[in-house]
Length: 600
Image (cartoon, rainbow, N blue to C red):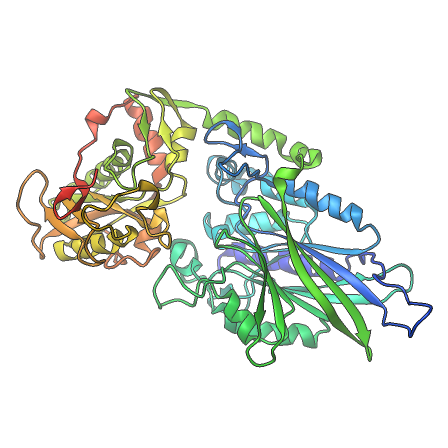
């Protein structure tokens, strides 16, 4: 490990010690004895609140629109709203036991988070990360590391963890050299279930991060960390927690419950929460994230024991708060769960917590000022609304910049004579460059991920296979049938896993079966088919080149990799030119067809 891992281990030891000496949380009996009949067993209750995938959202603010966040369902976002709900429940349950957990993906996802990782990185300035400021006010009991926690490298991750007032867990992030956990695998929190003299309950909390980190952030973790299977890791640590006195075991897992993966079989399952519940005994509940779904309450039956495992996922961005309630009783000196269930709270029902807002006000204001910086003038409005199913200038803008950068970098090398193609995905359906002033927030709204630019060499046959795989994004629509843009894509394939390629001309026939849809693939401006053995340099982002999305042929040794962030390259190009004009970069080269007839 790098020196940052030493800092991580020191922090882990400090957090573990702090957790061990943390004050007990007061509780109260949930049921009194019935004086008239046989005395029923005394029961006690515990509430566990859960968040996940907050993705750098603190204020209820849309940095791309420079306005209060809103969507078609009138959701709100942010830790400040979550804090209000949490504090309401804590007040309601005063004198009772309440824990607050998070299932990961915290320090990436908004310009606010990006600013303190890239523009003024906390590793350089020593400033406290805004998400640490906000979450420390909310006073979590433990959080799990999500895959996006690794986006900015291990030193920044270690710095952020060191700023938290609670433990950060990841049992399946393992030191590649020692084979030992690189972060704290679990904590056992002891909570008092009543007033003076009342019994205490030991709650074991196991954190599981996503094994996809090995692909998605390969450049940051390769040779330093390995990420074993989440099911196997749970099977290893749950018995340890029970042996060390855990009366109740909760897993906080950064993985969905679909049982499928967005990558190939070379890595453990990306979304195994249901499998964990079915296969690992001794688990009472799983708070999970990663998939950004709203799962209010789902019980999964353990295959061998028949035990019911409670699972829940609180959507994304701080839009929802999971509430799990447990009722327990003592039998022969051991705790037994009498009942358990979960509900979901909507943050659009409350105002923002003023203490959280105050803790981040200066950092929020600095970010707002930065993203409103004008970088260029656009000759016309450019929208991404139709980029999924039409060739649009705004997506060509990305491909043009990527092509220029790679072409210049490879000039004079052995690859300099090869044609350069470029790959981009329609990350946002709402991105727009307005006519006139284009600001950093407009560019950031188009390119929302912190990807870097790389390049590899593909043959003509590999390019065609790549396009065929990408074309599975579309639903099959027979010739003559009505085409609705709202339903033209397969809901199982996210927009970010549909790629378009510039530098060649091609048609996608959506009336044909998946794998047979690229009916025309020719050299630009010609009728000459692309030869199977032709060679091309492909400009591509690091996520895709590392295997994200499981696209064929792209996981190869790079011929270009200068660790340049694509979003910043777009900003730099716009600032250098001063004008964004489609006449400089828009080259229509692909279209959807049915039996050769254009769809649009």
